[in-house]
Image (tube, rainbow, N blue to C red; front, top):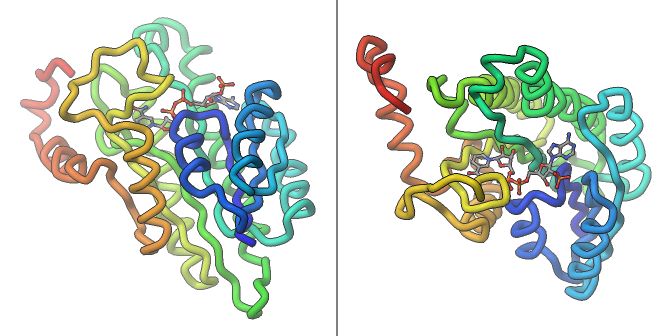
Length: 251
Ligand SMILES: NC(=O)c1ccc[n+]([C@@H]2O[C@H](COP(=O)([O-])OP(=O)(O)OC[C@H]3O[C@@H](n4cnc5c(N)ncnc54)[C@H](OP(=O)(O)O)[C@@H]3O)[C@@H](O)[C@H]2O)c1
């Protein structure tokens, strides 16, 4: 039985992942804020044959993180996949005008993710499998926005950059134990988060395409996933643009 814990189970990308993975061999713990919506997803996954537990939590409350990780391990024993999939897309202009909002957004997208990963990693690196060797994947949805701060969304980008850097170090630390850490960097994805934006059609992935890429990257134990694949090359170009040109760009 594969044990899967989803932090932010109501995210559109997370829902696509759970639908892809759900079968009789899976036991899920789905964690999100809204109990009614969670129950609907749980019913869907149960109908597909999986065992599903739900928990409500607002991840902004750090004081609950340790207990949350403890309860997850008590419920399923070892974790095979931990997927961190929650976040907000801050209004950059509002963040520039209001430091409280800026910090709140940084807490949600950056610090709270790091806090949760810290608690779960501590427990995962001690978990035993049937064969006696440690295994499992920590898959974290960051963003291409973390690769370089842009004027139009650098608050979000800064938080995602912190998460990506944290994951890089965590991967190096846990590689000695057998735990795989996957940093997921989506570009544009057609989800609840981006509903209010007009995204370029050719560069925008569906949540199902992203879920498929995530699933493949977990199986192949990839370190960093750009999804869709072409974002690796787009970001390669964006990162090397000299500052004298970059700071004049309107994006
Ligand atoms: N969509 C994109 O273009 C894109 C691109 C790059 C990276 N990403 C990243 O992909 C991940 C998934 O996002 P998505 O696109 O699937 O968007 P989404 O459908 O809007 O999902 C975001 C989820 O995060 C949850 N959330 C926000 N703050 C939370 C908190 N304090 N505690 C608990 N849950 C919280 C929301 O819960 P509620 O339902 O309760 O509001 C929502 O379900 C995020 O990390 C996002 O930054 C998305």
